[in-house]
Image 1 (cartoon, rainbow, N blue to C red):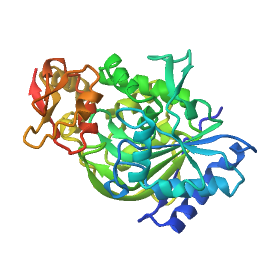
Image 2: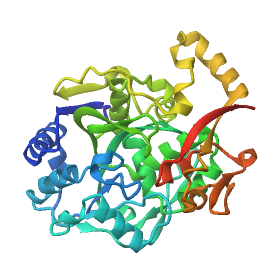
Image 3: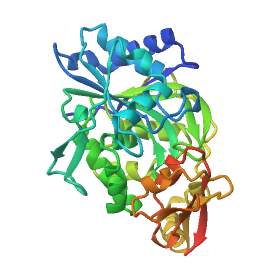
Length: 375
């Protein structure tokens, strides 16, 4: 199959239903999404529902983006549409219902099914480089067509959270921390994510970058107006283009570096259609990443400098004990089980910490920050 690399861009300055429907119509036409449809097919929407956060907090995919995508499929006779994701933490029916309510998705129940099935299916792909099999949440495993509806954010471990990272939510519940533990090295974790992306293989990815997130993403950062909706059938080209728009050097994003090494993305062949890509000031990175001066060096010096930095400094989570409420969400999500609750406060054994920042992602009161310590 000939490499396409087509990424569509629509300038959408606010969450307006009419503007979003127009953008989706235009982008899906450019991408030829309608040619993928057939009567009676099962379509699954995979949004970013990291946690129970209100839409204006820019942590999750905005419900109006989901609504616009649903309207597009319904208008073409596709009625079997399920929205499914496994948020951070436990994967239970009660948790899912609470997240749907807080994230503003209940209003769509008359048009699409909000998944409450918390079982999973084992799926294999022998071509996997790091991981050849995954347990996938059942709707994803049984879908005829997956629509990846992601949010544009910076991320403490992977630098970028967009289309590629969003598919990690296809892994059920606390099996995600298990994968963090199996792949604690940043590049190995990125390789595992690319294996997962190849297994799920979404037909189309829509990125909600209307209001994105910068800083301590994916949950504790600051909303950032980006004013764009992106869509592509090639999620690697799409993440590459969006990373550049955010002021990131794609080769510093581990997942994109892995995709490049595997030949899954051809930067010189990426094509942008639709509206012009916005000219933005670089996104502010998570604190654990922004202290890295390596990306500012000439390319020839980056690899040895990064190796030196990795030997000298290591980013680790730090808990503000004065503000900690002792809810235990961090301990629940910690892959090596190095966090415990003592006297109503969370405490981290940094000796065993793998710096995955799952604890920071899941802290509901944002009291976990990132610092660097000398090894």
